[in-house]
Amino acid sequence: MPIVMESAKKRVIIPRGEVADIVARLAAEITRDYKGKNPLLIGILKGSFVFMADLVRCLDFPLEVDFIRLSSYGSSTETTGSVKVEQPLRSKVRGRHVLVVEDIVDTGITVSFLMAYLKKKKPASVRLCALLDKPSRRRTPVTIDYLGATVPDRFIVGYGIDCAEEYRNLPDICVLEE
Ligand code: IMP
Ligand code: MG
Image (cartoon, rainbow, N blue to C red; front, side, top):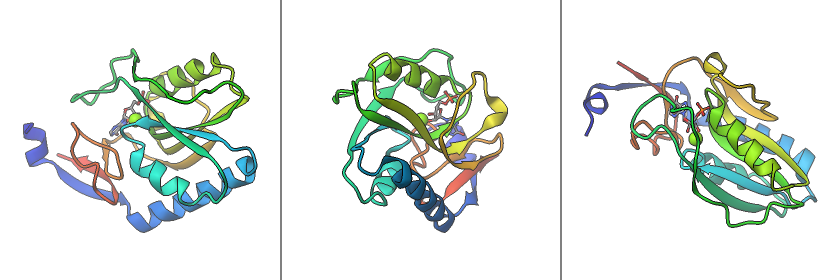
């Protein structure tokens, strides 16, 4: 296990009750815009899996879910700047109303890659829902259509979000402190 894991302290920044309120508010916005459109929700693995699970259970209308796995930080905390599709979609995107579900937008490189990748597949529409936004480190502009909360430039873990694969199971959103 990396040394950082053993010495890291966690501080809760968004407790689970507030996360639930945020998810409910996003679900209301998404319902207003997508009810009756049978949208395709595409989660970016692995970080979005907890958010996706809670979000879809607040959406009381027909929809489909798929996941895509993109290359990520690995065990480092810095993005490499290049994105690859590591596990492709199974669903057809053409003609669908697509909503990308992401855990956290940081530099913006991952989601801008994915939005461009999906647009080439000719969806009826494609928008982005992100639980968290860390705008201070943005390197490429990103429009977040449905945003949960803005967070400071700290390393976030919990609620699906990891540091070297650890902490995804924390129910609260936390920052790692040294
Ligand atoms: P990007 O820098 O916007 O391309 O973000 C790439 C990916 O890095 C996101 O999808 C997250 O999964 C991950 N990421 C960004 N910031 C954090 C963080 O603070 N903690 C853990 N993962 C993060
Ligand atoms: Mg992610």
